[in-house]
Length: 224
Image (cartoon, rainbow, N blue to C red; front, side, top):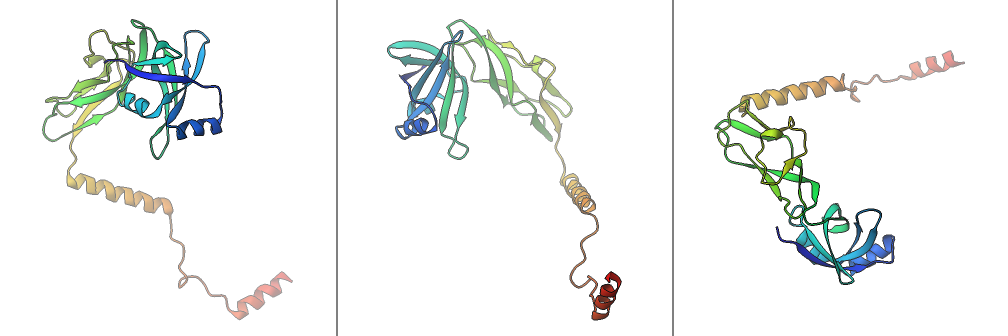
């Protein structure tokens, strides 16, 4: 994947107010962590940054004050509703340096008829050259039958990529497709469990005992 070039501006103001002002200017507050204890506070262009992060594990060329540094996203904070990027944590990397990243799993192929493909692991942790990170890892389920599965150790990785995830982790599981009768039976069982958990229903207004005047007088006498 080619590097995504972004022009960063030094950032000297901090806090929520400063961050809001940057976003109004279509810029995104960011922090870039270097090797050792170096930290650079900067802002990134909003649109270009959004486009860059459409690619998973994008390698970024960050230019600040004429100096260019390769970086990867460590954490991207997004607005819970609009999904706009609100803040980015970056980590400096060097070409040829091995880094560990999470990569999404993409299922390919068609399993046998009457089966359901269950993706048990959404991502795999891998180690690879910072400049040669895959956007996704493909796992083929072509022709797999009921009861078959794919463990992490069986996933074919691109050249130069090493698996860090536990090799015994279940990535894909193939199960039998449920019939309409089985689904209906499960729903009925769930409804029965809910009814049992709730216990006896509260008495309705019609079923509730009515206190008479005599009952009230008797109660008052016993309290005295």
